[in-house]
Amino acid sequence: MQYMLIYTETADEFEKRNHPEAASAYWGGWSAYMGAMGQAGLIVNGDGLQPPHTATTLRIRDGQRHVQDGPFADAKEQLGGYVVIEVPDLDTALEWAAKAPCVTNGSVEVRPVLQR
Image (tube, rainbow, N blue to C red; front, side):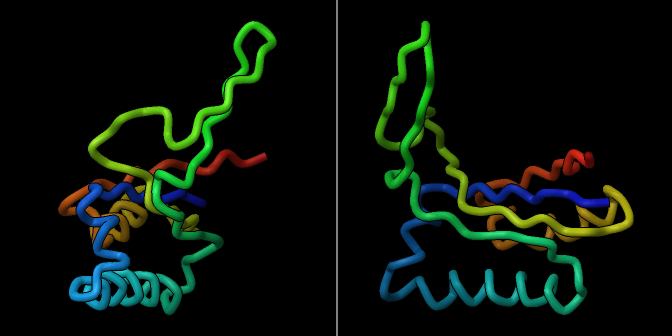
């Protein structure tokens, strides 16, 4: 079964991506985590995302297009990336989610992929 692991991080964690002193540890944690899933043969697809300020939100209301720069919701945690994994069951997906570097400061949503 396929599950999407949706990673959220705090603004402070996002800042570590480019911080001269914190970036190495930040990216090292993610590289080790993603490498372990890759070696286990679980990854179907996935990507990290640019920071929330690069987002554009589109809504159509009453037939009118409304475009807003940045994410719509003001949240303490922001979407940082996702990966789709192929595992036997939810318990296995949760085991991998629990190993994500962001799980102690942010969260990991685990959601089954809709099969067609």
